[in-house]
Length: 195
Image (cartoon, rainbow, N blue to C red; front, side, top):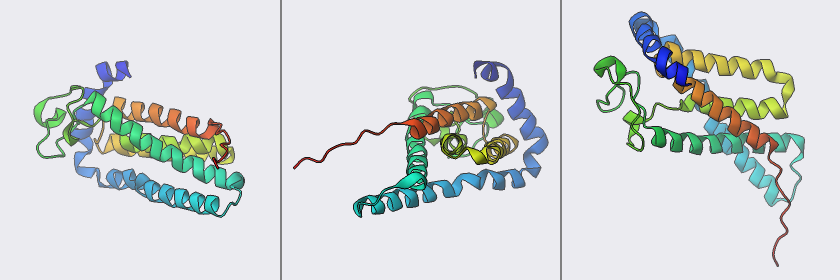
């Protein structure tokens, strides 16, 4: 990531703006692959809660649904905290005149700055995509090529849309992958109810 910040982020963002800015609509549309994940995860949590309330076993598929939903929601929280901690400016100006590389030549980290204009690192789209993909990678391995394809398509869409720096995407992938594997492998102990 440090190599990307030092050598690739600025030239790739400038290149994408100069050569792909006018034709990025399909890539922006492609970045919306992840938009339904939060809704699906919420349904998964509700379904799991309903089964739990009826004292029904989760079974293998229920475990996959629950763990994948937990991976997504955990990744949401982690990426929000990391965005605040790092406070990185964006490639372009998106939110209320935020400083950006393209408009202002600004490409920096302002830890704990807060605000949407300082929330580029890590990429939330890539974090959530990789959290789901890595959880499913561990729990449902027969579709691994599909998970890799989706991760690649989201990363490519973010890059070609000039939404993120390369290092934002790499960091999102790393964070999401770790969270997803954690959710997949977490051994939840049985807790006895107190009378």
